[in-house]
Image 1 (tube, rainbow, N blue to C red):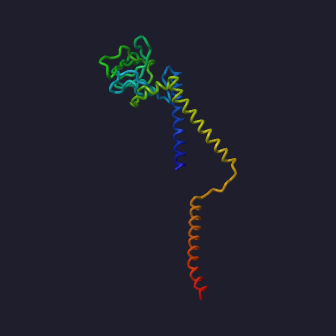
Image 2: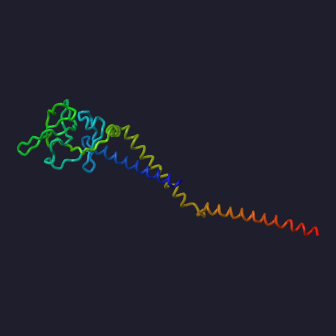
Image 3: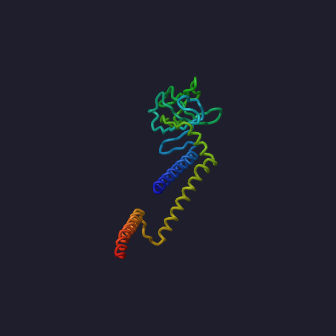
Amino acid sequence: MKKILKVIVNILSWIILFLALLVTILVFSSGRNNGVANLFGYMPLTVESDSMLPTFSKGDLIICKEIDDLNTLKENDVITFWTIIDGRKVKNTHRIVHINEFENTRSFVTRGDNNSIDDEIPAYAGDLIGQWTEVKIAGLGNVMNFLRTKTGFFVCILIPMAIFFLFELYKFIIVLIEIKRPDVPEIDEEEIKRRAIEEYLAEQNKKASQETETPENSDISQT
């Protein structure tokens, strides 16, 4: 049972370390790329509004991929792009409703599934960030936003990693102690039980033989 628990603890420790490293990579990657994390061409993005309801909602995490060829994009695809809203440059994820082509240049008219009118500014090639892969995880976007804060990074990343390394250091010290400890023959619990039973049976047989011999000896002394 102890061995099984030890294996489970080791597996959980490595899973926590892997997730912590993955989130660390994503956080630092997004910091170097205008807030857009990129891992092998795939980008986890947090939905910032409900303009795409019911496809996905604010706080969801969606996965987009890099667009290698603009010509592969078609109407009804969902794309993420840079746009201007209220005077600020922000990321937006909407559906393509029309494609404009002029002198080998393509631009994309977009609209949110929850909106009644098209977006005012078309998305051009230089504005595109990625294409939605139709993968979404409800609510995880809020978690990613929290992890990007100093408090979230400290609580969810640094502390688990510190605990992991302390645990591994503890195991390493135990191994060193075991190596330096003199060899002690291993005690087989089953062997101990077997010997105890044999000794008990032998003692019982001895008592039984003594009891059978005693009456005979008493009869001989009386004659």
